[in-house]
Every structure is written in structure tokens, then in C-alpha cells.
Amino acid sequence: MDDTCYQTLRSVSDVHVFVVCLADKFYEIVPDDVRKLGPWQGQHTGEMANLATQYLVDIEEQGYALARCEAAVFRPEA
Image (cartoon, rainbow, N blue to C red; front, side):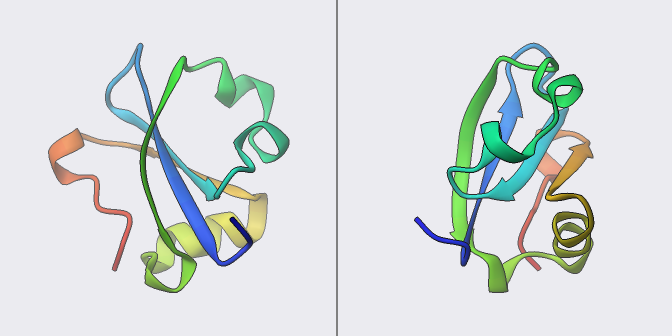
């Protein structure tokens, strides 16, 4: 995949924690302190153009977005 796609991952140990990042870049971009919140399970991939603004801003500023919410309300796309 390339920089036009994103992926979401959910922590297995805390099902309320999600990461959104460039596809296939989780281990390159997400810092150790966040990765240690896992193990992680891949959830969804999609086009960066479809992401909600809040996640796009976080990815642009820090390379990833971290979300804490109920799985039923986690919606990465706008």
C-alpha cells in the first residue's frame, strides 16, 4: 500500500483503544509507549481522503492518531 491508504488497529488488551495510521507503517511511525498498549489487531483499511478531519490532523502532526472510545462508536471515516 502507499501513503494514500490508512489502517486502523484495536488493542486486544484494552478494546477501547484504537490507532489510525498510514497503512503498513504502524511499527515505523507509532511510538513504543503507544505500541505497548497492545497487542494489536488490524481492523480496517481505507483511503486517506475518507478519514475524519480529527484523524487527518493527528496523522499530519504526529504520524498517527490515538482514539479511546467504545468500539460501537469508533468511526474513522467522515
